[in-house]
Image 1 (cartoon, rainbow, N blue to C red):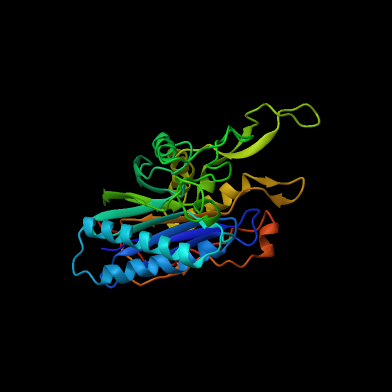
Image 2 (cartoon, one colour):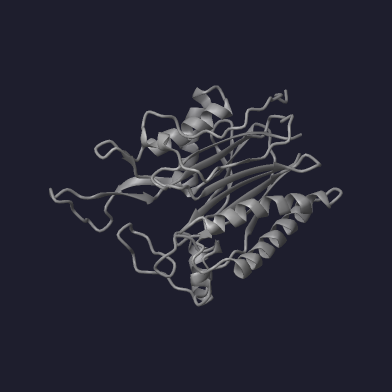
Length: 331
């Protein structure tokens, strides 16, 4: 039993985009879904997104009947190998990337992740079943780990955040060699989550831009008219992401292609500045998986790094890279 998925992306204000999406299928019918959120350039995210999913597929295909623990071990090993390759081949100015990779089998969902791009499993009625834990300064266990290893965080900035080394929003990532070369606490060791595949559930993999909200300045900064300044900051929870996507899914009669498209479009439009005619939000990427469906073809999809002028028009639809596939409901 495989699964059906749809994906969508919008670059927001960033051209060219630094997000990447990948979907691959093994010979045994396992599907590997991946989202990568790059930062400070494209070199790192390009290497990671074009290498890691394929290596995981090849490693899985060598196993006759891998258990969830076998898959977990493969994910950990491939993350480690790629981190070493990044250290050997990238320059200190190549940027960095988060990664969330979910292997979907007939019985389980095995996820490896670093950074703040989440994987979220929810039921048909919108109940949060499982989700990954973000690797950032809002995660107490990550703060404790980083500080115990000799790392440090900045004082609260204008967004109300404490950045790693006064620079990074995440505490785990590929790349970022300029920091890893002399700072401590930043690594690419993935957390592994093993969840049972339950009937009637849906899986989300997305970039952290789905947690963006417009907030008042945490420090009370005011504009030239004396009004509290507004800013965009990551304040949403994983339940907030479900609360955004699930009503669209219901309204679209559980059609995941139109749901993915509309979810990204609506999230992006929250931050469109009509006065200046431009988008203000980050790259926004989503994979939505219907775990009740059977997909009949092997698929591979990825986000192109090419920018498009159509995104300057708020009335144009978000770039949709959804996979059109047939689906048999398991009744």
